[in-house]
Image 1 (cartoon, helix red, strand yellow):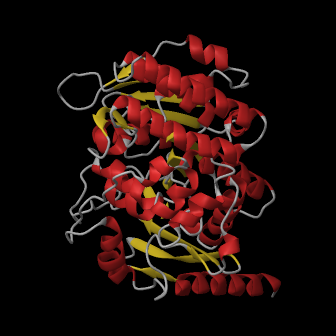
Image 2: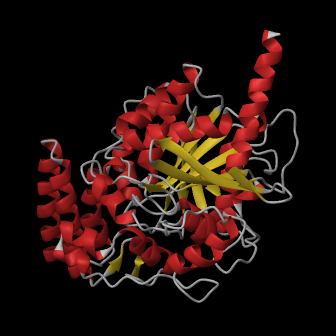
Length: 458
């Protein structure tokens, strides 16, 4: 009798879950809200892959994509600009990561994209608070769906999303060990991730000098500010470091004649994904708080299928599809506040979290675009050197393996792997690797996840 009651309760929970979620008729997509805290609502969108391959020895994976910012929307940018089934013109994307896994997009933290809070005091102020909300969301989604529990979850992040990814992974592992979360963590992949802000800002001046984008005056001006940033970080004054970071970006822009922070081969705003992503969360009110320079940036959003901005596209075309967005909620209406609330955590490093994951045997992958400036590979090398992982020296002594994609025979990247640590250097790619190198990115994610749809390892 007790067993029967448990089954009835389980079925009731499942029915309540699907009553609160919306699904397409064929079941290929579902989406909804999870109230991660009272009056704090997080929006999620799950795609079930039409390319799914059943292999008893290799479970089909799920990728949780975490966007950066903080305040940029994974539901919009990661989905329509980078890896989802449709592009921003609503045309099929040949390189969608659905070919290797199911895809879960989340507007994280609360206040991002279609996510929202009813009380402005509820914005998260730390990466750990964001991780706690995401863990609550995963509990709601996975614990009530046995099919999801069969798939290993890979947390794949871009930019500031990398900080969310490593804190989430540790939070999720704790919940799994406590029996509160029913999923298997497959690994974490950090794409052009803001793991150590100090190392990234220190890389900008020397890198731009080597690229002839700086002269000595630019290098000296940049280095002076970097030293001030390091002092503030050393004193634990992270919000002050954030203010200096924004001023440093102004110095970089002035002395480089407006270099694109997302691709140092371009001038600013030449990359439509980069410019629209910045506009997503860096609005005039927030920018004035940090520096007069940033408020003068000329940011424009990319055009979309309906001929307007991304916000127009999400608030019109996508809103009509979803049907569940509250009337008083508009896409991105609280993104400024998301960034502001995390100002004290923005410049805080998360190297220790990476170390904990590696020590715990979690698969950790780094992939970085060659021509990114904001999260330059030079900065990644610097923070990797600071890892305390017991096998770091063995990793460093390995030779890299060249990577190819397509029939041209050209080198597209390099890879190095040792035990549970993996590093991909992606050539001819900036901050948005899946956009710049879609073929290699797809092969890479198949390798990372061990997808049964993937060809033999690169």
